[in-house]
Image (cartoon, rainbow, N blue to C red; front, side, top):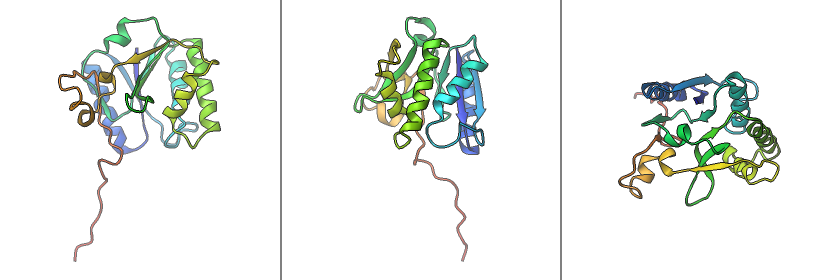
Length: 190
């Protein structure tokens, strides 16, 4: 299995390198890719299926776990490494029932077809985010995949999940930085 993460700014790059260090510390392959300025991978959303397709093509012997750069791997992802009877794995949020967190895919033809459909849906419905469109695709008859639901420990956000699951042992922690950390500002001195 290959862990793949894509960054587009210096800010997300620093997180991606931390993710890579935690994965390699567990003896796992992790590749970090700069998607800034890369045709087909630009923008806030819509780029994930293309990124996964490119990664599957570049690493044909590996299944791929796509992880947001602002995450770390805490322990071995046993479900992804030890179970093999599914094509894709994703965590579904309990409250919204939407896919969230990392996305695991096998490197096979069914998954590649699903990625192409997801890419088409993202282009047809750009006002919806990647994960909302992924949910549409995963439930579509044109993409008959075996989907493994991942437990919350694979999409752990400490401030959200610790109160509900006090004894939880996260596999992957997502720092969920959107809007939480601001950039530096220059303040005029008087």
